[in-house]
Length: 495
Length: 62
Image (tube, rainbow over all chains, first blue to last red; front, side, top):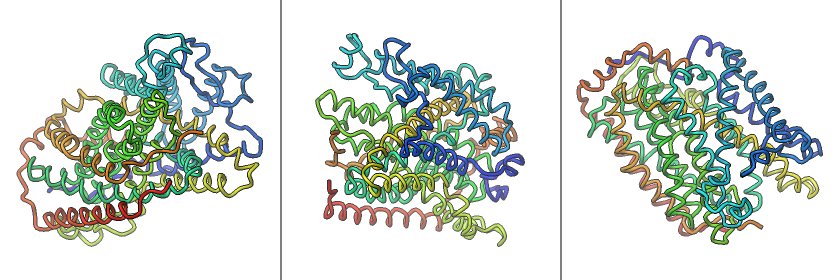
């Protein structure tokens, strides 16, 4: 195996290595910043109520509005502009901290925001999003695709796919702001607080779900990885250098796992980069298919569906976002049957499963690095895997998720009633930003998914391993394990 | 990160990569790889059985 001994793939370029912080820490800071601003509402200071929120519409003039009634004077367009300006300022400051080109980022983000949000608005059109007969009656329409309002994420994804595959030059122009990993990590940090408020109502159920997340770790690292590595090596004849990042990408958590593994086994940087491209393309395919499959066959097993998204869909962004779409579709189907589940549980289950899996990336990369540098490619002592790499590869945004979860739980359960009653609304405003970061994630994933370029590079064999493993094994074993550990558990009914 | 990806990609031509993937010689599984696969699967299946038993005897409480 011809390895260029790259010590850490995640130390990218000279500019970024001189940056003040990395994308993970930036996501923690941004997520906590928004979360804390939202909490100001607990002391009756509404700092982010101006954030734009979109409702299902037939009259475009009524689609948009600020999240808080206190900012009603802004109107929908005012709220949208305020949201754009605030996000541009904050994210451009983040780009500056990452030593990116600030001007290019701001311009690119402008395009990303407006196209992504426009797609979201289109997806909320009543003929696409209205679900129940009552909603159809309310909007005066006779038919609807029943995609729900969160199904509008698919519209952002499709907009991104169109740009990637039909306007590749434009995709290059906006690439500075096409950062799905950053956007989803910010969203996950905010989601911690939202999930805490949801969990506070049924703490015993939430703790039971979290305990069952352990099964996901076992499945991803010990079952999936071993089988996919075997398939890649034995059936498809891939070298160890290709097979290990490929197995991690398909089994664990897509992009970050492939990159961590590539660094750990000292592969050439090109290997995890190509695997990552493949992961994103297949994640898109999964997001477009699995939530609808779940709605069709798992509508009465909502938490099985949520856990399945966390286990089967690769990359954090796609998995958590697929959990969001699945929740929306399943809640809508149940609502049409007269059963109204509390929102947040399906998405929370998917996110918890994914976060549990992410926690062990550093440890698994260290195990592989130890085996590779000591037994397979015996390297000089200075380049052997070291325990400190576990921390270096630990996805730091998980710290943000845990912090917002604990703070949210404390505020909901440990504070006087007059404060606790305001917690859902305060975190709800921050959650509106979470939705916007989801939209940006979907759009960005689409822009990165250039199917034709991937095919041109001759990755048919890599894709064959992916298809065989994902659709022949990972998806179905994920469903089986989700069924074993989550069947029969339903979210609490909405009060 | 994506600038870096482009930098890495630019160092390899498409035909280089295609050729490498097409002509790569088969590396037989080493004993350490077989051991890694076998241990992972054995440990994983054992833990899943244990967790399933715990799940059965300590069901979710609502």
